[in-house]
Image 1 (cartoon, helix red, strand yellow):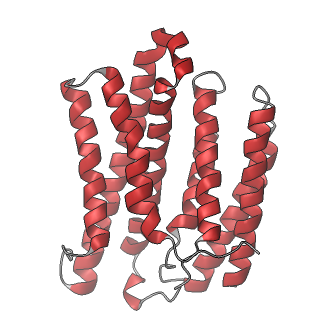
Image 2 (cartoon, one colour):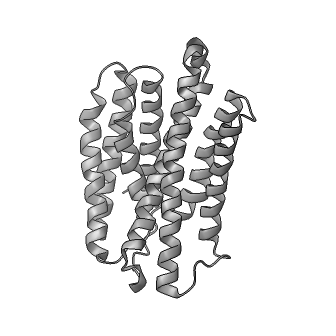
Length: 255
């Protein structure tokens, strides 16, 4: 069943790639959706198979497979006009890239442990993936402000600033819920709130403090609008570097 999950992930990867090609070749047409829909279905089946294999416990290393699905869903809520259309292309490219990395670098130690049989464990995972996805969409909106073509839409800078900040707030909210779910899960399962020297906990807290900084900059107006946009765009590097990379395993050919 695990191998079948990998097969569906590869199908999803192919359709994500077709979606990226379609949105580049036909930028003003919604035809990319015809490839995105089967990509989301195949991705969901891949996730479902892993859940079925581990249920009622938490499937290990599901986040790399779930991230492209969440990003694919969020692609659909981006605007059809500039700069929303540009953001849609960026988020769709991130969905394809994350699916590619999950397929090329699978981490296949899928033996769930007994204490993951908790709703808090599932909340920790799913809220965390939702938070990552919102952070990446926030970074995409910030990047759309910084691209050279943005000079033609100076009157929309404030609106873009509000969009990437709004997505950062959503991500921060999901991330905080994930952290609290993880703390409660740890306390109820192991009798200790957290293991502070665990690298997994350290990178979660580091990401949280990074976005505390973004919220602080926004509310205090300490930096310029473009300075805050650069900070928000760097959030993609933080999220992918600190939170996605540890979930990847050894390199393997797709076939």
